[in-house]
Image 1 (cartoon, rainbow, N blue to C red):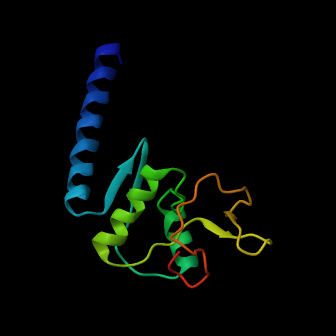
Image 2: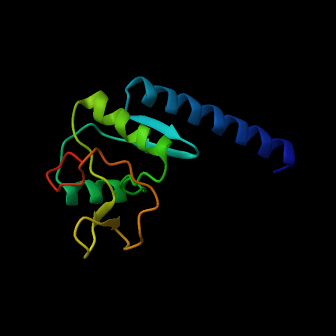
Length: 121
């Protein structure tokens, strides 16, 4: 395989991926922020099922690390008129949260008087 063939194959793959992403955007099942793609199947599930589904798809549950990523997640909340699970959990310190791997949150965007633990943070 010469360099031109590799370039042609690469271009074909990029074109095909762009077409597939376009279809998913029309179906409102993907959006992106920066270099990350956020996706949903639009189905309601419990937290553990959501974690497993994300893992099976080769990804991880959404963990907003900046305003753009937070907006990408809110896009699905608004589009499907539902809630979204995030890859964060309450720490041992009441009122404090952390990523699922135990690291401290570097970005938050809580509503006033939140988090309250009542699901509308």
